[in-house]
Image 1 (cartoon, rainbow, N blue to C red):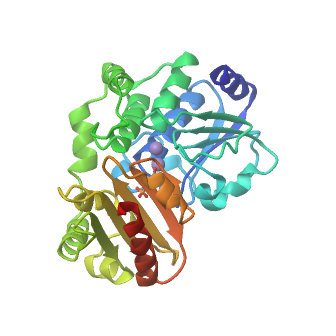
Image 2: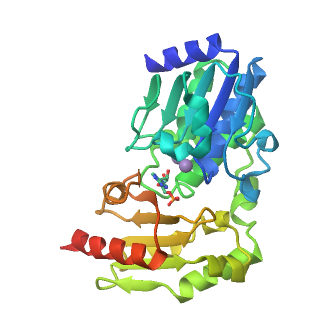
Length: 317
Ligand code: AMP
Ligand code: MN
Ligand code: MN
């Protein structure tokens, strides 16, 4: 079984580097920190490297302050990559993969199985669910801090248990995490009742200037550099904004275009029942899940937007 092979390889390795995707989210951070806190508790040397800042709302998680950026001494005998469908998603820290054993743990349907060992479970709601199974099988003691990391991964990737990736097993794991001491109300407050005034200003713009196409079946939000500057909001503040566009009753496909710090255009795709945005995002070099996907492209934001909307019309023919 792959899980036994993964555990064996972790146990045989002494210096482990944990990587996950750029623009970290609750699941990439929660699963990375849960794994880090677990393996260091049994005496492994480990490091988490992410080549982007940790969003402020996730900094309460245990060891979040130990996450480093790309420049670290390359002394590792094992690389574990979490919540990343392909090598390009980890950005510059992919340099640590060369010549190493790679464990790839993920739940994206579009995962390219780039690891030496691959544990890819598209039915898992979050990578944190898979990490939970691994550390449980390793008989590692799950304390409140580790449980919090896993709980955050599950809560954020299921949209607070609302998306159809939420299964009986998701609730079962969440329930066990509560038994380990997680205070769910505290977690919800720290993540969802903790946003900045700058983010609210950005949301205001997003809502006021939302565009609609195709009999209001398509909704579109555009966030330019100017909007970030005017509101004072950061890149990480875009998380969740597309939900306003998706949640409108007529909408079947929501799109968000934003100019990111690095000069690229980041596209987010969300759908309800019928449209497979993993496939649609694939047309632009991205991917993700059936109802939530993303892509990063270069070009001028309005040209990119027009191109994507033109193609999106084809989904409703
Ligand atoms: P986001 O719209 O950034 O919240 O991402 C939604 C989903 O799409 C997540 O599961 C991401 O892992 C995936 N995703 C986001 N950006 C990309 C990308 N550039 N390439 C592939 N998948 C992505
Ligand atoms: Mn993620
Ligand atoms: Mn995830």
